[in-house]
Amino acid sequence: MNAVRPVAFFFLVLGLLAGCNGGFAVGEVSGTVSFDGKPVEIGSISFISADGSKPSAGGAITDGKYAVSNVPAGPTKVRISGVRVTGQKKMYDAPDSPVVTTSAEMLPPKYSDDKRTELRYDVQSGAQTKDFDLTK
Image (cartoon, rainbow, N blue to C red; front, side):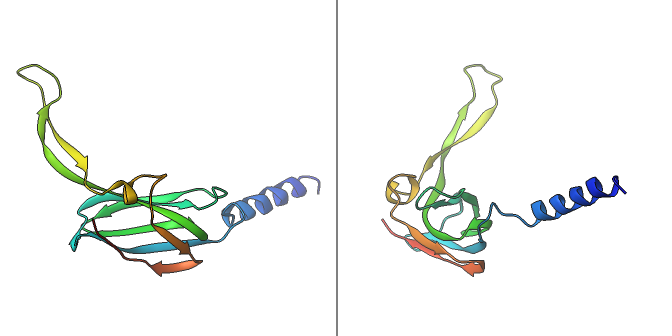
């Protein structure tokens, strides 16, 4: 009978951990991202707790679309980064050096910088759609 208690306790703790999100509700946010009317082809999006009390969540932007799960509910700052290919260069100065693609941030800091972003979104529990139509 004493062996049953630790096993039952283990499964109780396991069940609580499986359903636990750190004690707060989460949402799933998806949508589109465009800049000056064109989809952001490659980039990333992050939802950052406005007061810093919850973890951030983020994901990739591909062909202007994104989907991020487990975003803590509540007011967030949103950081969006877009990448544009600028060219190619050798990895090092040698004749047999591999060539890599170079890129640069295409969005202004008012969207792409963690501290300067002007974007805000109040994440709700459950699935939701939020499109971002960004301009210069």
